[in-house]
Amino acid sequence: MPYAIIRHAKIKTLGNLAASAQHTFRERDTPNADPKLTPQNQHLGATNTAELLERFQQNLPDKLRKNGVLALEYLCTASPEWWQAASKEQRTAFFQRSLDFLRERHGKDNVLYAGTQVDESTPHLVAYVIPKDDKGRMNAAYFVDGRKKLNELQTAFADQVADLGLKRGIEGSKARHEQVKRHYGLVMRGEALVAPEMGVIDEMSMVLGKPTKNAQKAIETHQALLVRADAWECRQKAVKQREEALARREMAVLERESLVGHREEMARNADWRLERSVELSQRTENELNQRIDQLEKQLEKERSDKLMFMKARDQALERARTAEKQLGKDADYGMPR
Image 1 (cartoon, helix red, strand yellow):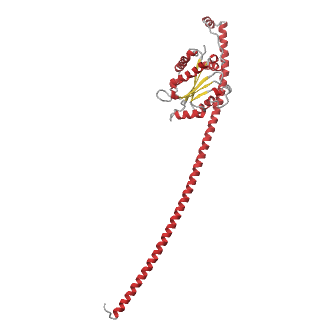
Image 2 (cartoon, helix red, strand yellow; image 1 turned 120 degrees about the horizontal axis):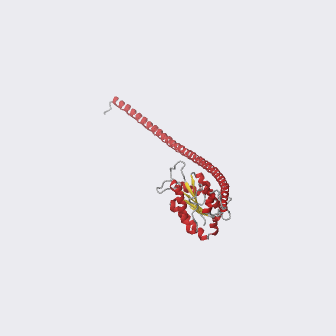
Image 3 (cartoon, one colour; image 1 turned 45 degrees about the vertical axis):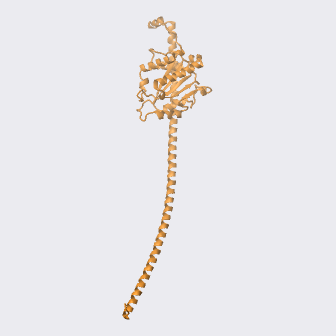
């Protein structure tokens, strides 16, 4: 029976989120995607990297723990043979149940993006989630830290899609975590080798150091799987490193553009303030000139009034002196008073 597969990755910086999102939104070359099928990819919550980053910045708390996890990226899919046989209704049901599973697990408001990618060899759903616990705190460990929680995650997801003909992946295996991770990576690419099932006799033959043909084939298949997995993992690491380097360069360009825009805005504001200052200075000068003209006219009028007053005063004094002299003469002639 085909596997139900759910994987997650922790994202600790906006630069890493941007790098992942640019792959998700096909904003950079994606060699393993068929460009003819890319328009059939569906997006919910954001349609490009800029919108996704804006949504995260709006929903992240003001204070974040240093080196804390900003987001969890989920990938939900199934073995390639299931997709090849699945009907359109089954595919739609798988995507919807995957989204419902993540919303129930994290809360609908914390699933900021979910999208289907059907242009790759194995269709899958990708989601970006803010890892807030039931108390509203950023707490990725609450969901994905520890073997027990990861086992519960795999089991719960498999139960969600079990009636679609899918079963849980490797459980209780003695294989190392990295081997399991590589195995799922090959399953995603449709490259997994299927080892024959071993019975009790086969297992006992391996213990005795004389493996049966069936056991020997299982050993050879496992070794071939690890060789191919190593090569696949190396390619994945190289791709991831290139994506992160490109994301860092693009973030640096965005920061420089933002700085240039800020400086241009400051320059425009400075020009406006200068023009405003010149305008105010000109207005003030005109008002001062008008006030000076008014004061000069007022002063001239006061001078004129003063001269007229002094002239009238002098004339009155002159008349008074003349009248006084006349009175003196009349007294000398014995004129009656």
